[in-house]
Image (tube, rainbow, N blue to C red):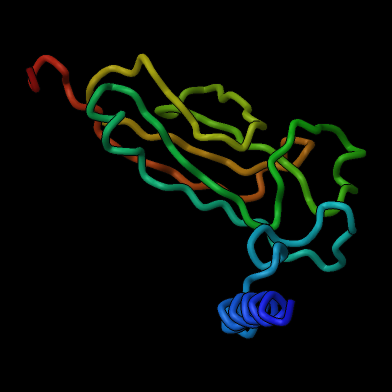
Length: 153
């Protein structure tokens, strides 16, 4: 019985010692990684930011345009109208205009933008971050060249 107690205590001590350095180092909190809780209003919110990456090269070589983006200080959600302006943390959506078209489309998914069916050649995509009333807050333009699949064969 004494041997069992000794063995059990040694296992507990050994396990605790193994995790002790990790317990002492600062592990980022959930708030550090994903930001403030969407359940509590934020006073004096920082201005929204839009960060847009260039199209992913692999799909682009195949004639498809995948554009990743992210926002800061604004959550992209399918909520619209005057009442949504009072929501905190702030919410909104994006407008996407391809090649200076006189129209745009709206996306509120927060997912990668996917464009297919564009002709080979130079293109530009305007991505606008908008509030729930469609007022543009900020924007980024991405320019790229879609390769001609006939020339790469």
